[in-house]
Length: 257
Ligand code: NAP
Image 1 (cartoon, protein in one colour):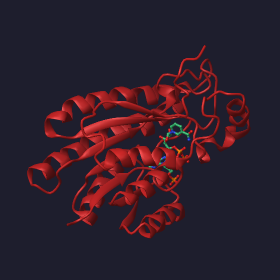
Image 2 (image 1 turned 90 degrees about the vertical axis):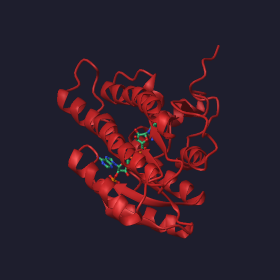
Image 3 (image 1 turned 60 degrees about the horizontal axis):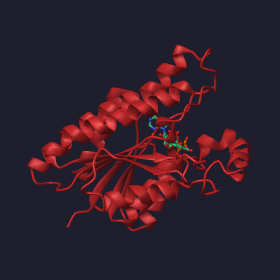
């Protein structure tokens, strides 16, 4: 029986790589998307192959519609199917600027990458999944969006990032609602503070906050923490769940007294 196929954006490093390895572990071949870091993408490919699955890499800037379309085309041409889309790629603002000073250019860049890109990539992939379902090529497609605790947490030094992630929260609900009739689930993982290149510049700050109890579970999250949650969805353990936001955050979301 042919393997299921996962298209994972931003899978060259960090959380995306963790997801690639974990979904390979539950039987998926993987299309590893990256923006510019081909070497890192090839390392992810090798890790997936080490788990006994097939992987290919594809450069595409998901902020660009034509790149996103090419990415979907490449996945279908290479593997013949898409069973799982993981909208993981995302960026932080280049400069953490106060809400009263941040620029429209940074806003546009972050929103294009973190929200507009995934929104239309999901539209394109959903249409392809519906065609593949009708043709009997796939049977249980799923979509997972990687948002953040920034969906509901105010960080006034990176407002555009928070707005983009809040948008992913609504995007998850919208596509979950629209695609349920086709048997496609759409869920969101909300990672907390995860040890990756993205959080490298604020490592010392978060080390201190975590050790002081910011999160009930006093450790950094790891890419594989998020990867295992996605793998549980990919393996079919959440097939009666759609439009849900699942925290993978060491308990950050708890209100405490
Ligand atoms: P990361 O270490 O900076 O890695 C980012 C990944 O996204 C890389 O694979 C990068 O590719 C890719 N990418 C960036 N811009 C892209 C674009 N325009 N088109 C295609 N790929 C692009 O980030 P991360 O920490 O793993 O974060 C992954 C996701 O989790 C993001 O959506 C982020 O917002 C979210 N998140 C992260 C944390 C955290 O604490 N780290 C917490 C909550 C949510 P290249 O290697 O080619 O540059």
